Length: 107
Image (cartoon, rainbow, N blue to C red; front, side, top):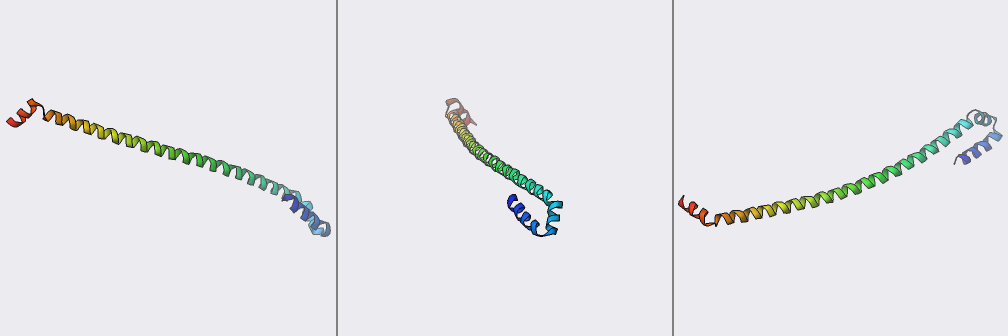
């Protein structure tokens, strides 16, 4: 792209003395600025690609963490349910014990 602009400005500068003066005064500065802009654009695109990759990795990690947390939550609920069932069985076993039921009737 820079070569197209320099070719076009070179064609104009051959015929117009003012264009020749502009090219002499500002031509190299303009081309240098265009190269710098192109370099910055390339670096910006590389950073953009890097950030997109990092965000994609981060999103995948968050999804994995959400699944793991859900599995742990479900396991905890199952464990609590099992503990409650065991406690219920223990209480029922205590209430049907011979010594406990006669004391409860005496009160």
